[in-house]
Image (cartoon, rainbow, N blue to C red; front, side, top):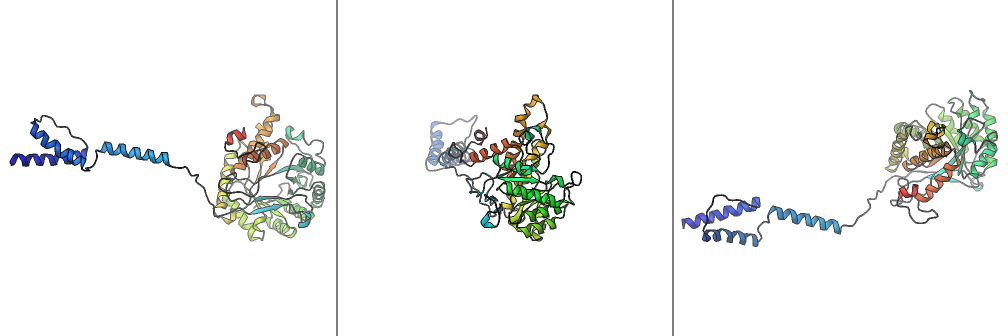
Length: 403
């Protein structure tokens, strides 16, 4: 009886050890056949009756189950549904709307980030404006060669840009700068009238950058283009933005809100313009566009943050974004003569195109361009990225599409 009790206790202890550790190893033990049978039989019976499997077997079984789950799982694209929406801004007005434009351009209205058509359909494509000036100036040779014969005539220059495919003409009244020709606001207004008569696309009117004179010049330009829904470029914290807002409201125009690469300052300026009575759908944000190789990473960050903030519901940042890609010509690599880095006839337009493309993918809606090749390529890229190219189908491989 004593032997049987000891054997029973031994079996129990062995079962406990096996269940906890999965295996045991016994040294220097002698067992006769009867004792071995007495030990093994309860262990086998316990395992067969549903005792816990060995840890190694458990792990293996669990892995197999996980693999099977992965094989059977279906991939679902993670889709973002944003609570906010970027407002739509209309540039240009047709005759029925009180203007004289043959076409209008709408920007903004985004429900998701650019080209995320798998999440939502953004109603408006990026728009492309080409720069002209009211006086001849020093331009990169690769740009100047396309306009040299019309640089003394802004109206003819505007027509040339429309021939190159511009959706909008961006007229810069730089001659009004007191350090240049100091042209009067009245003379500048006549130039605006001439350009409006020469082309029937929407126009953007910019000053010279002189903070004292620009508000006066833009006020005169606004009056000359009454009812045409032009875009006044720009209101900023350094000039009399209230005067620009009053002119825009009086004559039915929109305003560019310019700030130098700071989301908080952009938000603050927008709030100021709204408080001064400018409607939300008459504001376009210019957060500054740095050229490729000259801080474009900051441009990406600022534009993405503005666009995402607007989509997430920040009402002070729910406006379309302007990106002057023509700033790329400020980079010396775009225009300097150096055959070691490639012919500048190709390098320059490429520099501007990559600057534009980067800003477009980061959230830009409206772009200013200098070189006609940039306009042509940019329009083709938009066609491809939206899947409406002559090739047909939706483009899923962006690298191939951009190559």
